[in-house]
Image 1 (cartoon, rainbow, N blue to C red):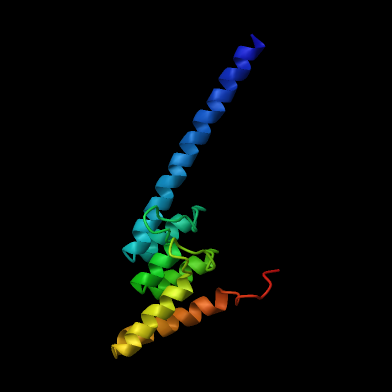
Image 2 (image 1 turned 135 degrees about the horizontal axis):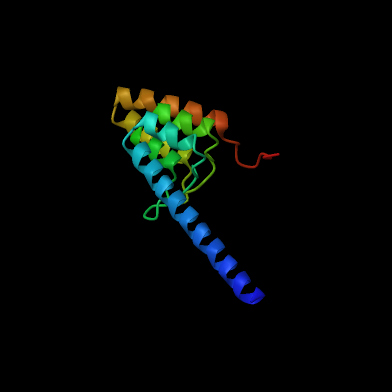
Length: 139
């Protein structure tokens, strides 16, 4: 009888764990969606619920921070960093968010797109405050 009780208890724990993982996955997908849409208020609400802010999208490996950078949402970039999003995470193309910001900035300068140049110069500045240079210690 004790073995049956242990098995039932173990199975109950697995069910709860599985449900918790599914809820978190749903929350992380919601965060990716709200960041992609530039929905600051909803993104902040999810971040306050301790959602995984470094969860990578399956397609590209982009984190919410990568997506906010790509979309040019500097207020969401700053929000994610305040909630401890990791600016050193790389996507499947081996790019950190700051690498993407620099690429977009460079393209905007070449195209003489003043508005995009200004936005990305600010995003690079924000990311630089939270990014440890290559070779430096992360103590």
